[in-house]
Image (tube, rainbow, N blue to C red; front, side):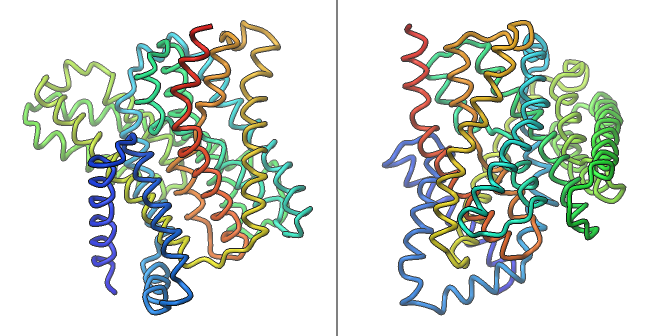
Length: 412
């Protein structure tokens, strides 16, 4: 089956599920789509033993289209640029210290905490997951994703501080998490079995420093080009070209395309925007990237649903997934509360606010995208199932209850 047919299937399913959700279920878009994709996976797994032919075709399709590379090389650049472009830098600056603590220190702490706990729990279950893979899992599962929870928090009328902190943290910890992930996977590709801190440190600095610098250069060039014309069709096309070309070049010169896209997106959305775009152009550019972000998240959830259908599930993998949820909640608790309790000058948030931020730290599309990008192996299958279970809990349980929790805590 050609790759084009695969795209047809994904788009058709996404449209069908979106319609069912909006017509009958009425959950927030991302939550509803993930819920229906999960039901689709469960149904498909239920009939898998009876009807083998479709699953053999799906397996061949998943292998031949190389979904892993598509997700890492295409989806991430678009998603990170879109998320950062819609972020108000001037509002973000008011809470930049809190965001920096959570996004940088929080991701590093969470990566190590999750890796160590996951290593011992997996070995306790008899699953020999190498420690380097545990670190990789810690890096891909630590970044938070506010897409599913933002509309709920707005409806709950949470203070600006909580909303901006969650958005800003997610924006920057996505970049940090991807840099750590890529540095670790490059070590894996180089045949490094044990964690090598000097090697990792060099790769991290190369990826991060290069990505930030390249993002600033791209952002300034794009700003200049947008400023010299007033034609929204061309300007939308320019943003699209810069994301695709910039992310591709970053991969070729071994710097962080993720951070480059975050920085470039922030510049497009904030740097002298009145000079660069007319009101009409700004509206079209914003709507285009908002819609593209939603579509890509929808496709991502369906892609992981199809991939899960062809995996061989093991009860131990599922138990590990449930135990990992506990590890993640503990990691999130410590990530927020350790700096808060050390000093309010480090993290200036109240107790009620900290609880909302802890529970609002959802995992989403980025974690699924990164785990799909790992090289094929039995360990990857374990991590995919565990990641899916964690994301499912995060979106379907945390995402649907955070609104009520916020209202209850803020009344006190």
